[in-house]
Image (cartoon, rainbow, N blue to C red):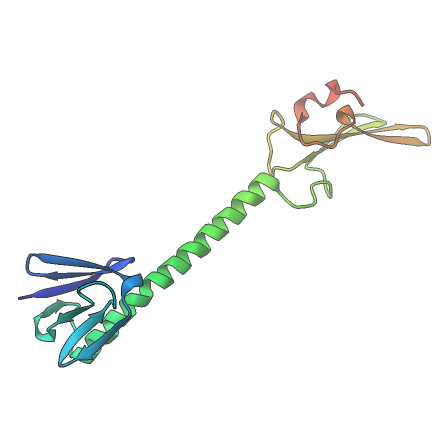
Length: 174
């Protein structure tokens, strides 16, 4: 009977005629040649070994039994590689999300916005979110007033919390 063996990422699918066996890769202990047949050893349950006759295997197409064992062993590692690549992708995406939500870890290093409405008065807007919109309540706003030789620095509503709206900067108490 013709046999096809496929890598399903989490397992190995063995189709022999109308019979389909799905073997979770974490259950497979060994793949080897035993008594002239391919043996997939799970070491668990009543059917600890699945024997496959090499001449019956159509997929994957190999030149000999040793090459088929190597192909099956490679299938065992494909899940680890795929999961590792997926994990790297997820970690990179999470880092990008974190950066977009929180920006730099030093939110007060450089203001994102500066407004100098008239001489002697400036507003500096600091946001924990990169590219924040001025209508969002994600700003800490610093007012800088200069009168003669005296310069005062005051935070909107006396708070450095990132909960102010940049567009309302002139309405806060300083």
